[in-house]
Length: 454
Image (cartoon, rainbow, N blue to C red):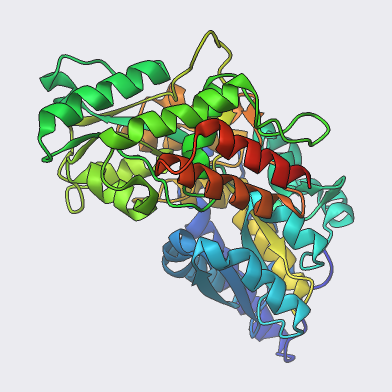
């Protein structure tokens, strides 16, 4: 890494004392991670926290999605200050504003931010707009970055655009199906393994609930990150894809039609009203015991298990996303996930590079993924396979094998070229109309296919 940001000269004694204190602070911060991982020496940790991480007087500004804000402000900012002497300031925006805010900040010349915490499916749009630094050459010089440790199911999808790296993988999201054990038990039902079973369970429970509770939640707000996962979960379950190997949309296949029809069929038996149901409503409905089934991110399990937030503590379980038709091949749809990149307009590039390397590193990621109610999932094999992380998962509880299978398997990656966010938006707009009964599943998919290829 290049030399640290220049600081006001100090005496040799002052620098020496500050260095010793900073190294001690870094070891205190890394101690729990080193113990859990069992393979990093104190000497190596001290070396990594040496002069190259001295950014006293530098204020580093990060833009992130709202769910990550707590991790930055309560955990990363104080740790970064202790480690480097620098200040970390974070601004959060809603997911619908993330790409626009990033691109506007760079293209307008404002250059307020140094780092961007971006949704991976927005990568092509952001990189094509010139908002991210190409990190390909820099990564090649960082031998201690250990890129082989990044989960291969996430490394390329989260960071690679047109054969160049524009970030480092940060949050390895995945969806599971969570179920209310009491509601399923009341009707003698088991956790669904197929989408037909899912729909049948939802129908039975909703009809029996009389409006007091419902069989499922469908996050149907027409936004790619909201309605996109319910459709894509079903699409993958039936063995389908959004695009073929050449990037052409495959929205008129039998698998796509089955997926869209399932969304239409389950809508009457879901928490009202699906196309007005967002991510927050889905979580709160399930935690309140008002829904039997919900597809959501694995890290939500710790909120469901938190007695200060949830009424279903000890009453829920999790299972893999169902399959459909004759498909037996299980793939994880990458319904979300984040990378960390450096703004092309950053005035503190050395500090920004040091930050994304540190924040996505093994030791720091282990601590981040095991914080209470953490919204961060593993990005590295060493973190995923650590005893500390498996213990954290078990505390929810969620079967660790479910988490591991989703993070190491062959994923179904959302297309993330420059035009794909708009293409996905067009798809969910059409699906919402179908869910509302305003057109058929076939018409919705034909319209989306035509717009995608135009």
